[in-house]
Amino acid sequence: MDTSLMPKVFSSHHSWYIATLSSIQNRNLIYTYSNVVHGFSATFSNEELEEFQTMPGFVSSIRDVPVTLDTTHTPEFLHLNSFHGAWPASHYGEGVIVGVVDSGIWPESESFRDDGMAEVPSKWRGECMMGTSFNSSMCNKKLIGARYFNNGLLANNPNLTILVNSSRDTDGHGTHTSSIAAGNYVDGASYFGYAKGLARGMAPLAHVAMYKALWPEGGYASDVIAAIDQAIEDGVDILSLSLGQDGLTLYEDPIAIASFAAMEKGIFVASSAGNSVLHIKVFTMAFRGY
Image (tube, rainbow, N blue to C red):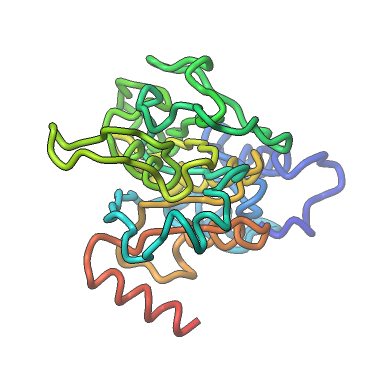
């Protein structure tokens, strides 16, 4: 939406969107976005969308689409060394807040103990939301925030029942990716007794904030960009995204657009390029073209 056309009678863009939508139908607003874009997500029929596109302030629309999870291998190819170079020079991420948008987190994992962690940065504005099998006491100086987003998923599946409606990870993917990004030191880690050793994330002294937007029941872009929007508001320094959509160019990908908005606000965004060589080649070509 073009906010320069917002009538002065409205106190905020949120109230403007609600009033505009109420002229079509008054029950379809899913999210209002404040940081990633000037806009919102809502449910429309084709006829309603055509009517809305004629209203003052309309710029463009993108259809909400499903999102899939990506994964990664351990980052040994970076040749990080514990004794010299980027790792010790960065103090292993001390004081940095890493926001992870994923399938949630298992707070009891040893990777999220707060042994040796610094205090939570004073700039932090996030929270630890309560939900199914998850309460605020599960956060600490390592896991400093946990939120969850599923309005878009429910709007696309009105009869869906979410079994674990909280930031708790029942899939394992979010716990996996967040521990890779910023897991604390864990002695004696192994795979069922094999390959015992010291496990640690890329930034073991960094703080973690989980934004659950991907669910066993599915996931949609509207929830992901709502999570990114909130992460910006909360004050993260880094966003980690191991998810994506296939077949979209960057300028038509709402997650890429939201990530660019985060970058403009000084947040470093680390995003996977998919789970295949083909995905990586496509994204490399796109960024070279840019």
